[in-house]
Image (cartoon, rainbow, N blue to C red; front, side, top):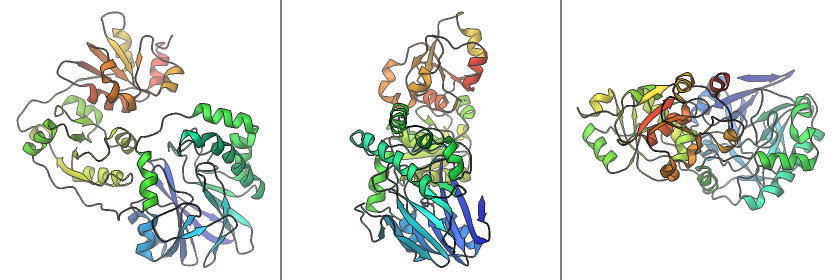
Length: 458
């Protein structure tokens, strides 16, 4: 996705990282380019710069990121670009520290630094000016998002109230100082848990934000109270991202993990190591190695694996083919899971070396409706508590997926039907619960269908 700005021959290219709900930007003009908030797999940025035939001269960070490992440091090393990071963060590498009012000049590109605290204390935004000085775009990181703002609780509960008030004033400052037609380019808000609430739309302007951003439509106290009350749990791996990004990430390694044969695979499973099956959730349900966990490789894969993963534990992955392993490897390094200790590919029966496979039933909400009241069964809802409170099946036990491993003893015995909002989280939960002494049924269906069937109640 690209955008151009009138007679000012500047191109803003968007690099999507849908699995994490983030965007990075390549801003190019007259053969030169600036990169903003790059992800760790910088080959995507370098390939795009090659396509645009531009030289990267500057790499800019809006803040020390909490939801992914940055590629900024390595990109600056590889290209010789100046690395720009907000002042105030005590980082372990050389960089240009910028403060409010500073200007970055890169050939015909000029970006002005605006201190916009809230998502973090030292967060900045970058206003892009044309040669005549007019603002044509603003890169807002985790400050002003499309229809919402960045969450304010990632640095600890003791900072949340102060940062939430700061976020309100930061967004209002952007709206006050920038023209209505300024394009708004946030880093978060496309599914990222760094967003306080779900964002809206793929593009926006300051004028549109005046109409629909809560920091611009509510008074300060109402905004603060609503944002804090609406904050939900966020992935556990976030605790490691800020540390890695402050110290300076190691160079990225996208090489394939070494192959693991069936005997070694079984040894790792029996040792209680993390062995993750990337295949489609229904294929996993139809047949899988006992003791493995099903994390279907999809847009949700890295968020939930990172959330549940025991940080630093040996990790082996199983996939249909080498391409699936390579994609998972790329997703994992984005959140700093570098040490994948092996991979196995191919037919799951062959990987079982002739041993038995485990399986469980897959159903939908219509199947569940036909069973309720006719036999004894338990319903496990693994959505977050706020989702459960908004509406749930009567009698359903709510254990959010990210709490399931430590609350496994609370899962009812007997036959358990597991559901979430779409089937993805429940597929992971089913693989965690699946044991020889349990009967698990995966509800692979959209929760709206339960509502349509009249299953929602007290």
